[in-house]
Amino acid sequence: MLSSARDRTGSGVLFVLPFLAVYVLFLVVPLVMGLAASLTDVGLTGGRAEFVGLDNFAEALTDSAVWQSFGVTLAFTALSAPPLIAVGLVMALLTHRLAPARWLWRMAFFAPYVLPSSAVALIFVWVLQPGFGLADGILAWFGIGPVGWLAETVPAMAGVVLATVWWTVGFNFLLYLAALQAIPDDLYEASALDGAGAWRQLWNITLPMLRPTTGLIAVLQVLASLKVFDQFYLITNGGPVHSTRPILQYVYETGFTNYRIGYASAVSYVFFAGILLLTLAHFSIQRRRRERGEHG
Image 1 (cartoon, rainbow, N blue to C red):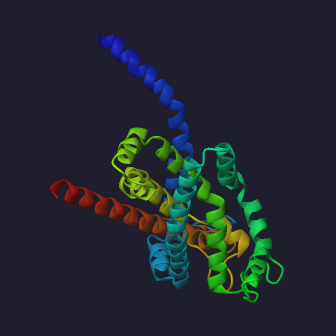
Image 2 (image 1 turned 180 degrees about the vertical axis):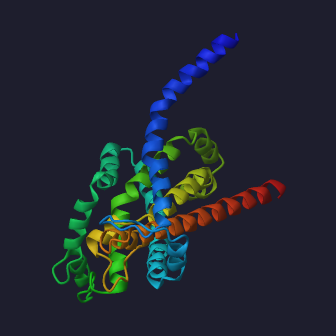
C-alpha cells in the first residue's frame, strides 16, 4: 500500500518536473537576478557593478517621471477597462441571440485579437492620421474639424484606448459567450411562462448569472491594462512630451536607452509592489462584500 502511494507520488513528480524547470528558469531566476540588479548600479554596457543598497528604490520613490508614467498607466486602466468589459458583454449578448450565421459573428468579433501588436499599431496610426485618416473622416460627417490625435495629450490617450478596445475585446467576448452558453435554458423558459420579457430576463437572470464571469474579466482586464506597453510605444511613443508614456515604457527607456539596468530593475519592483497592493485591496473588498452578503 505504502509502496504504491510512493510510486504514484514519484510518477507525479516526474510529470511536474518539466514545468518546474521552465518555471524556475524563466520566472524565478529572472526575479532573483532582477532583485539583485536593483541593489546595484549595473549598466547595460557591463563593467563592474557597485552595491548601492536601497538607493535605487529611494530614487524611484522620489522620481517625478516614475509617478507621471504610473499616473498615465492608471489613467489608461481607468479609461480602457470599463469599455472592454461593457463592449465584450454586448458583443456576446448579440452573438448569443443571433442564431443565423453565428459563426461569422464569432469570427468577426474575435479576429482582431489574433493580430500582432505591430499590425494593430500600423492600422491605427493610419486611422488617426490628421486630415485624411478614418477618424477625422468620420468626424467630418458631423462637422467637426481635424483633431491632432497623435500630437495632443487627450486625443492621443483616446486613440490608444480605442485601439486597445478594438484589438483585445475579443478575449472578453469569448469568456462572456462561454458563460452565456452555460446558463440553463430552463430559467428563461420558466420566466417566459411567468410573463417576463427579454429585458426582465436580462436584468434578473442573465446579468446576475454572469456576475462571477464579470468579476474574473474585471481582474484580468485591470492587470492586463496595468502592464500596457506595445500600443503606446508603437502608436505614440510616449508623446507628446511623455504625456502618454506608461510605466513599462519608462522602465524600458531607463534600462535600454539610458543604460541604467539597476535603476530600471528597482522601478520595476516598485511597480510590482503597487500592483500587488491594488490586487490585495481588490480581494479584501471582494471578501468584505461576500461576508456582508452572507450576513445580510
